[in-house]
Amino acid sequence: MTDEKRLLEIRGLRIEARGADGTWNEIVHGVDLDLHRGEVLGLIGESGAGKSTIGLAAMGYAREGCRIAGGSILFDGIDLATARETVKRSLRGARIAYVAQSAAAAFDPAHRLIDQYAEGPLRHGVKSKAEAYEDAKGLYRRMQLPDPDNIGFRYPHQVSGGQLQRAMTAMAMACRPDLIIFDEPTTALDVTTQIEVLAAIKDVVRQFRTAAIYITHDLAVVAQMADRIKVLQYGSKVEEAPADVMMSAPREEYTRSLWAVRHMEKPEAPAPKLDPVLSVRNVTAAYGRGFTVLDDVSVDLHRGRTVAVVGESGSGKSTLARVIAGLLPPVSGEVLIDGGPLSPTLAGRSREDRQRIQMIYQMADTALNPRQKIRDIIGRPMSFHLGLDRGEVARRVADMLEMIELPKAYADRYPGELSGGQKQRIGIARALAAEPEVVICDEVTSALDQLVAEGILKLLMRLQHEMKLSYLFITHELATVKAIADDVVVMRHGKVVDRGTRTEVLFPPRKDYTRVLLDSVPEMNTGWLDGLLAARG
Image (tube, rainbow, N blue to C red; front, side, top):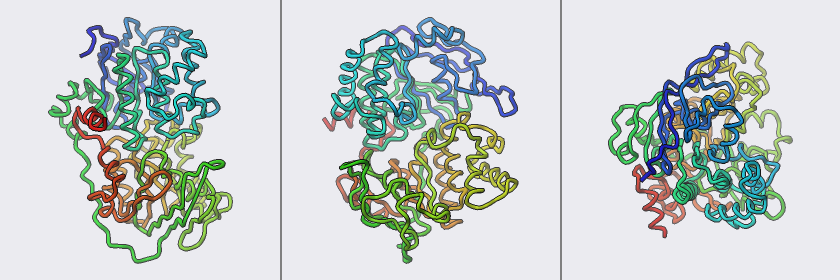
């Protein structure tokens, strides 16, 4: 039950984006939105639907290259569409907070977590530094972060992705805001960590009666978090209803298409007979002294096949990818390609070896240079590895954009002018531009809505068949494993705990830990999360 008083009232919101030719084009078309105190509104839709743009507008903010062109944004009676910047700055962080999709990009790497937590309360005069520190520890405890009295004194790179996302949610609560905008806060998290973060978010929102806008492309997640759901497409409302009604009986065909769970399942391939194209042999790796993150790990990847590496946050999946890519030298063990050893460091590898292994990174926000145009991001591997001249690079960049279903005109845009899903597709195009043999896919669909993710997976499988590519596919999405994997490696605490074909490992799960992963995949009903938490005690 929500409070009667309306906290946020948006009417006729229109937002425009500046095109490459300098003209302004409308991307949000007269959207209305109401939010009461203590209520959670879910915004869903595919990439480019305007979810994040509308969420930011609820703070009176338009991202670079965009502007609020019309309508009103009444927050507790204050019109943020016309308010002075000083008024809006006084509200942001104090009464309106924002939790970003990429915690890694949102935190300052040079400052400790607890100091960044204290910045808001100090700036707004809510608490002293000592009070903010004690409050941070209390919220860290509520967010179920390990060692809550001391974890705040770590730097962002010293905690896992799930821990960082919970620290960001705690930071958003520092001034006890009336409204929080959650922008895909669990998109990049594995299923077990996602459950912890969702439970922590739900707890603090209920405890403090905070209103929230929850932006996501994951229907099963929004079913657990929202009281009402608004569906968006191309910057317009498709439909809106209470969460239980929307999940059980969506009216519009577009909404039903979002509800459709992916039915992709890669056919079972015969066992490989040739030697592996890539081998990881008894690799142990560490960050700093005494912090081992990979412990005697061995993995084989055969030509034309996909090995999915699954496991919760901190299991060592991404570290394994960094070792293979030459970004983290192992303490012991070796990596081989076609039977020959690779230099443990990227600097020690030949240009040919660098070309043969390419990587698609998890966080497109941090992986793409914000000062380079898309044509340069995709084109540089072509000129560096393939020796193509400028004219041929331009032609191939256009072909790559068409392949990933983006307009050719996007070649003249910067990453900041694209949505999260569009940026992720640029990262895929950049990796494929070098014409590699092995592609390391580090959560490549985690930032994409279900419809776009399905298209990307189909694209990757088609390219694999045509080019005999081999994929090491790191993912926390078990539906993705079913869709694309031939073989599965399950990791936990830096060790391989299970391996085999997809069917052998998952259907049915033969290890207890694998069963936990499968049981943590959210279901499409509104009471699933509460039921799971109750069952776990």
